[in-house]
Image (spheres, one colour):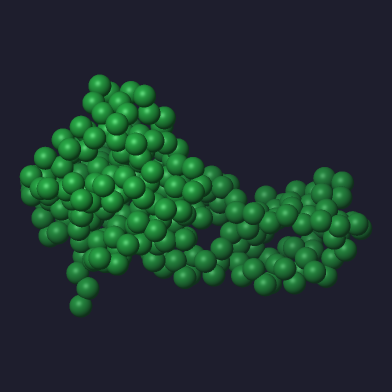
Length: 293
């Protein structure tokens, strides 16, 4: 029987009259890579900061390892690795000094693990934090979050600033941690990243959870942004019966966002006279605008 590492029940946070999050509820099972997605400003970071007792909720509750996130925060922190969306470090320290300091907070010898992660991420530990690019600071944050081999890893927009090659290495590191037994909460506004590594996802919009879905279901009804260059005009209602939004026709150019099984829309396109076709993933903002009104 699986156990829940994270349990969030009716969690709300208000800043005066302004809503941060409202009535947020979901659970993350042990050993799961759980996605937490929504447009920027939807409430992802507020939820995470409440989980980590960096801010206190207005109402509701949150538990990690069956311990209260606020009352027992110091106990929880020993087994949690956290990568914030924007990390601020001691600028005058070198990378080596900062990571040594981070390890000392856990009262552990993490030198072997630090060296392993530095090598994988191609991180130069002799440089000062103030001299690092945003991407290299993000690498430091990744090492600092993982150096003590935490049971729970919480990542908030972790790939911002990382180049494509380092992203690939980072995903491999996460898969390795998960195989060792770590549970991962992966917060992002990049749908493709979440689809790639997560088994389940909670979708948040304007501070509220609007859906919790298995990734298999989400992939099956995946979203596609389609642009066509047709040789002949098509009927106005040609795509009417399909799950299509933001439908636009400009001369011979046709564009829309499609939700559903890929083979169905490909078949419809195949039956047209098409000079060119371009299919990509829409942004989360576009998906939320048209499908989560």
